[in-house]
Length: 48
Image 1 (spheres, helix red, strand yellow):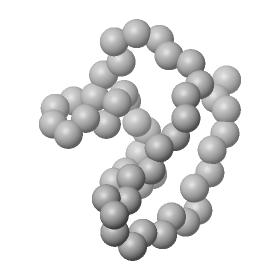
Image 2 (cartoon, one colour):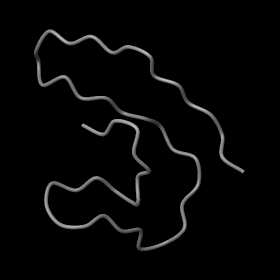
Image 3 (cartoon, rainbow, N blue to C red):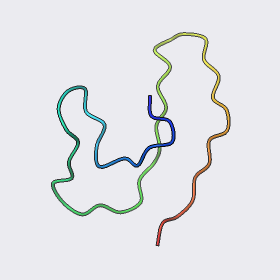
C-alpha cells in the first residue's frame, strides 16, 4: 500500500521500482484476492 508518496515506477514485490521504457495511459487494476474489500477516496487525474 502506498499513501501520500510519489510512485517511482512499477510497484514490484521486491526491489526498487523502475521504468524500462516510456508508457502511455493504461487501465488501473485494483486487487481484492477474493476478500471483502472497500476502496475509498481514489482520485485519478491526467499528468501533464
